[in-house]
Each structure stands twice: as C-alpha cells, then as structure tokens.
Amino acid sequence: MSDARDARLHLAPPHPAPPHADTSHPAPPHDAPLYLEPRLAPGPAALLRSGGRLHELVDALGSPLNVVLPGQLAHNLAEFGAVLRRHHLSGRIYLAHKATGSSALVRQLAVTQAGIDAASLGELQHALGAGFTPDRVMATGPKDPAFLWLAARAGVTVHLDGPAELEAAARLVRTYGLPRLPVVLRLAEFETSGPRTLSRRSRFGTAVKALGPLLDLLGRHREALDPVGVGYHLDTTSADEKAVALEGCLRAVEELRLRDFAPRAVDVGGGFGVSYLARADQWERYTTALTEAVLGRRPPMTWGGHGYGLRVEHDTLKGALALYPAHRPVAGAAYLDELLRRPAPSLGRPLGTLLLEGLCDLYAEPGRALVDQCGLTLGRVLEVREDVAGGPPQVRLALNAGDVGLEEHGVLVDPVLLPRAPDAPPTGPGPGPGPVGVHLMGNLCLEADLITRRIVLLPRPPRPGDLLAFPNTAGYCMDFTATRAQRHPPARRIAVGEEGDTWRWCLDEQYWPVTSDGGT
Image: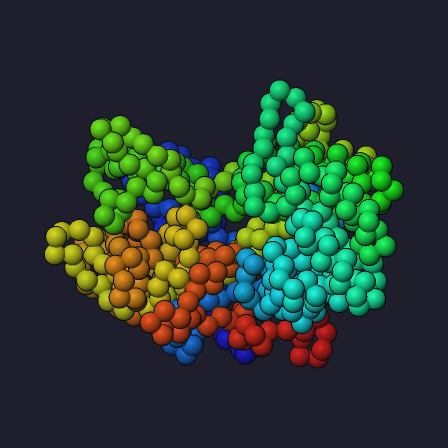
C-alpha cells in the first residue's frame, strides 16, 4: 500500500459534541441547533482528523472519493461471533455481498472465518476470486442459468427459492455428474399456531403452507441435493415477525428429519440494522421538529417542504415517517442477541435455547451491520450560492445523489465539514462563524439531484474547496445507486489503514490482505 503520512491536523470537532459520543446527554435547550451528529468509531474518527491528507487524496484521485477501512471488519465480526458463543451456538456469519462493491472489504473478510452471501453471478465470481473457498459461500437471490451453473459446479451452498430452482439444480447435478449439492430451503409467509398470527407476503421463498409438496419434490431428488438447512430473509426490522419465522424454521427442520434428511442449520438472514447517529435525543428532537414543520408550526426544514412521508390534509397530519431509524438503541450483533433471547411465539422458550436443543447451527447474513463504520464518501464543495428568496445557501458539490445514497435509503445524518484551510476565516453567503443551515445540491442538471432534501446544519459556512465527508456509507450507500449519468465518472475507491502515526492507502482493487513480506 502507498505511504500516506497522517498530518494530524487538529481540526475543530464537526459538532459541539465529540464524534463518538454516547447517548447519555442532558436534554438540549428547545432552540438548540437540530444537528444529526454521526456515530463514529475510533478508526473513522481518526481518519477524519487527518483532514489535510484527505484533501491531498481528493486532489489526486478526484471527487467524489470513496474510502474504505478494511481493518474495521474484524471488530464487527468479533461482535457477531461473541453472540454465537454467548448462546453456545455453532454457525457462521455471512456478509451479504450486495451491501458493498469493495474488493478490499471482500478480500479482507476472506482471511477470517466468515462466509459470504452472493446474490448474482458477478458476486459469486468476485467472492471466489477474492479467496473464499466454496464451503464458505452461499448463493442466494434469483438465479439465472449461468449463476446456478457456476454455483453447482463450484459446490457452494445454494439457497433454493422454490420448486423451479430445486428442479434446475438437481438437473445440473445429474447432467454434469456433480457431487451432491448442499442446499438451503428458503421459506416465507410464516404463521404462529396460537391466536396471534404474523405473516408477511414475499415474492421470494416458498410459503410454509406449501412445505409438504416442496419436500415431496426434494425426496425425488435425494441423490442430487443435500438439504443442509432452512432459512428466511424478511424485509422488515420487526423482531416479532423474525421470531415467528425462526420458530417456523425450527418446525421445518423437524419435518425434514422426519423424512430422513439431516438438516443442521437455520439461516436467519440479515436486517440487523445500524445506528448511524451518536445521540438518541438529536433524532427524537429532529423528527418531532419535522412533524411540527409539516404541520406549519415552524419554518420548513426541507427543500420544497418535503415531509418524508408526512403530509397535512384538512389540518390533520397524515401518512407515516418513511425514514430509516437513524438512531437505534439495539442494532447489529446486539439485535441478533436480542432475537435469540426472545421467547418463541408458540413454544414460549428462548429461540437460542431451541436452536441449541435442536442441534442446529445458526447462519446469519448481515449486510450493512457487518460493514458498519467501514467506509466514508468525500465530496468537494464547488460553489456556495446565496438564495435570493432568503432561504438557506445552496451548496453545490462535486458528486451527486447516486454517489452517496444515504437519502435513497432513508438515512438522515450530518456530513462532517473538512475545511481546505482550517485556520482561515470562512467566506461566502450565510451568517458568520457558527451553525449554518444549507441545502446540498448534486452535480447533475436535474432538479431532483439533491444530496438530501433536508436542510443540513454545518458548524460553519462552507466555501469552495472544502470537503464534506459523509460517514458510514460502506453499506449500500456508497455505490449501490452509483451511475455514470451525464458521463460524470463514478467515485474511485481506496482502502486505508492506520499504522502507528501513518495512514497507508492503495486503490481498492489493488488491496490484498498481505504484508510486504507475504504474511497476513
């Protein structure tokens, strides 16, 4: 990796509170600025303090620039591993590859004991090429013939979405004389046996009501397919629904065993969440103020009065707030721990205990939770324009909404201002030094190209040449929606790591988790 010395510039903190503050804060005054301070782990926080070095990297590589921190993965993976040990469970944590396009993060994960969930042919090729052996790869998602062919040839575990995929996988095994293929049956639309029913329709998986016919079909392909487990992946953050699904999977395991199969795992999918904000009180104050603004009880807080799902009809508030819960008291590995502690809806005993007694391994597929704090996106300020109507200044950046998809995923969090010359007084429109609200505009000639619709508070007025750092974008927000619209180049990506007082970096695609002497 290239040598990039940390200038250790002592910048002012991005907000009045320290960047990795916890939620134990006294209630702020009613008129306090509506900051949404990012939660920053020590690694990203230290990187942001090297502001001069980040400016040099953007000067050399362009804006926008994505920066990933592969070293953070070990910490996140250890937290999930600790949950398995706490519940005395065996199993494996699989990264949901679709959460990141970074080769550096995938290659770094390959040197751990984790697995990877590939949901396309390209992701499967990438995972195998990054160093994952087939026994640590799971093929999920809709599968075209090429994807299923490579999965079967490589012998990775295949999540079967339904009868058609089951038949196709068995046919490939027979046609090419392949070894028996390990498969997981993806199930959906679970229900409790008691008076309370929780069931969610899905276009993926086989409804549990159709499990019998699916197992009949599986029995006819016994010599080709080895059902090593069952699983689910619900598009919800509801722990109640996931508890119903997990209990339903345990029943399905018993059905398989009654038919002389030997399943040994339950896959609980992903959806464990990330807490993007450092302070719960800021999130509560902001959402309360947003509601008041939609009701007209305070000035607008967004471009064009956008309500993020809220609206007023006949003086009555309607709709629901369509935002990611940016501060979550329980997220990531802690969410998985809480799920395993929950009583099964029908059986009434902890789900982790039932897994243990059923001799079941636990598989989980975190996406953003496993790459939490593993990256940030940098964008350069191009112009600061005064609003002639008296509104907040408009800040145009050398990136667009597709380059930093926080808003696309409903995530509201403040960027961190990295001044070009930290000691120089700010210039440009807006009030003097102190908090200033601005609109963040992208570089596309589209009215809709807003980095975020909300008015963002910065600790001082920005000026051309400054950088805005958008934290915690490695999971989905960094490149999931990136395009080449209007022939703007997509963000380049680099991997960085701190070694003593030095930051070392290389292009993402050139990163391999080995030292100069060939060790790991």
